[in-house]
Amino acid sequence: MNTLKAVLAASTMLSVVTTASAVDLEVTHWWTSGGEAAAVAEFAKAFDATGNKWVDGAIAGGGNTARPVMISRITGGDPMGATQFNHGQQAAELVEAGFMRDLTDLAEQEGWRDAIEPSSLLDSCTLDGKIYCVPVNIHSWEWLWLSNKAFEDAGVPVPTNWDEFVAAAPALEKAGKIPLAVGSQSWQIHGVFRVLLISLAGPEIYQKVYGEKDAEVAAGPEIAKIFKAADDARKMAARSNVQDWNQATNLVITDKAGGQIIGDWAQGDFQVAGEVAGEDYTCLPGLGVGKALETGGDAFYFPSVDDPEISSAQDELARVMLDPEVQVAFNLKKGSVPVRGDIDQSAANDCMKKGLAILEGGGAVPSQEQLMSPDIINQINDLMTEFFSTPSMTPEDAQQRFAGIIGSAS
Ligand code: BGC
Image (cartoon, rainbow, N blue to C red; front, side, top):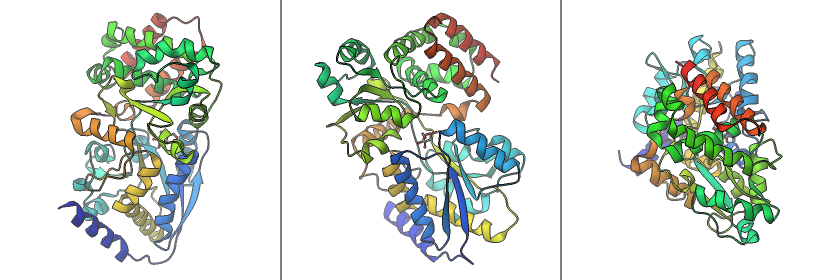
């Protein structure tokens, strides 16, 4: 099907769907920054246009705070209408225990297998051949966001890669800037490490360590180099005294920090602040060196409820989230890439275009959440937090413990 036909077919489908009666559907998620709120409002607007009502269940504090709340509500008999999780294994136990609706029939009617790219996103929703979630975006972690003015104030050129960034740190310090802004939550600190690993050691080493759980490679020389880079990063982040990721982004937006390593959701906040890529800030995918991006992001799951009206509103929301126009509107504000391969990406900003070029050039790698269990990821999160907050812990000690965790993962 050509692009125009696909758009028309899908939007006609959306407009002829009628709801038996209006339903209030609570949707939980952890999208609370300025950019995230602007993006989620696009979903809410499109769902409300079907006659139903989006009841916003935002949970502040980031994914690691929100997920336990979501899980205990579902297992405790107080399910929401729909909930966010990352692509991957975060909802696996809930699906196995029968808490989530099987969306296979809807997926077949709507042609999700043909429309969703890469197919690994739908695979992450699939258990025993049945589909349990709707992927809504592709987010990648492998980005360094730089404040152009911070470097101008420090009298040094804006770096074009990781080594130049590390070399510029003393000048930034001298000018009173924080070289690297990192929020103190453990997932953000591990985020810095995973980006150093994929970008500087390359996707093959990443696949060996996070994919195949090869403890020997994790203890070897390639990863030793990454712990050295992480040692540079923790020194550059020593004065970064913020908690949430968007507070760290704000240090870059206000030119108090040189840069931040975080996923492309940061673009939503740069946009809300009126910042322009290339003029006010610079984005370096792969830290200016790597040619691989994780295809992580978000998917929505729909808890099973014994109420046909709620089920039909859930179906409607699933359709809305994949509607071509809604996909474009939501993802432009979110800083992510649409999951449909059949829609127009021309409105993407310069950074998104760089990301798309890498993905289209064969640089897509599975996200860490797709490769590892939440338990192992949490153990690495904790180790990285300890490494960043304990200057006396050597990179060698940290690497040894890292290899131990990788070796214990199945
Ligand atoms: C989600 C993003 C979100 C980010 C920060 C990630 O886990 O995939 O959608 O913007 O967390 O809240």
